[in-house]
Image (cartoon, rainbow, N blue to C red):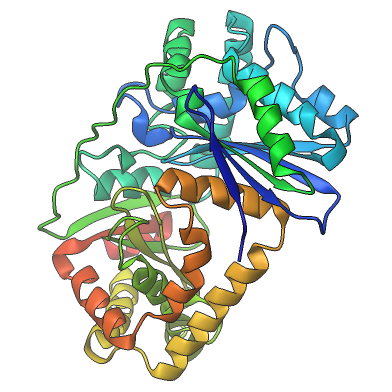
Length: 418
């Protein structure tokens, strides 16, 4: 059970505090309600660009990292299609330093051509290294564009193409900041050896004077139901052919999320899971397989991937995967295997919440998702899932017309299949 205290400042900033006296540290986490899904389709990659720009300094504090390191702290950030998250961990006695830094950059960045040019180059290089020059790197670009036709999940957080970042202007960047980086569009969480009353006073002191901003109402295009199977075959210079299959499923907040999550674990959580046992150990068709769900705020994807063994055809590999999906639809899981994956998931949840930083990040996300108390309800919600619910979810999910399949072939493999 995670205890928490909540308070909302007049400017709209939500503050959540969890007191943990078992550590001398504290985590200060700021979660902004903006991600890649909030970008203009012709100006993508901005949420991720800001992950970098926010460390580029302000007029008052030229270097964010310096003060953090001077008080024995560490910091980092991450971006998703739904959120942008910044955190700093410090000795609890130095927690006010984190408030000073976070409030300063929420108020205003040092917007300059020099800072933008530096971070633009960093992001472009990351795009090239991770997505263009790395084996299998462009799969997220290909599969999202195949599965989504109108919803902004059709591009990854890095953006659709390099030119969008190359052409980003200072005016574009300022506009994005003042639309989304606002106290009324963020959640501040603090977890660690702190006093909630003191934290609320610090929040008032450092964040209270930051004005509310006109955050645009989110009105995203809804992805229509997929009514036909989609397929893409590409050729790349990679060591082994690779298959990825994605199926549209629901939101992170849907009631069947827990059944979806457990279904993916039944297929691929550990060496005793179905895909490993059947496709790797018994049939020797794949060197590795995986299954997972996105857990997005809008309807996301259930993903299955596999790297093929030598001389195994794509058609045979895909047929073997589909056979396992059909078995699950027709027979469902045994009570034993379902209980086993439940135990794993619940234990991971419990052990994951031991660390004060995890608690700070998770409290912020549940608050933005609309019900912070779900952080304490999820273990029981996983335990309550039945085999019948798993079968029902699988039947709906694995309809042939709901699938988009990517054949990622080596040069040699494509030549053999031509």
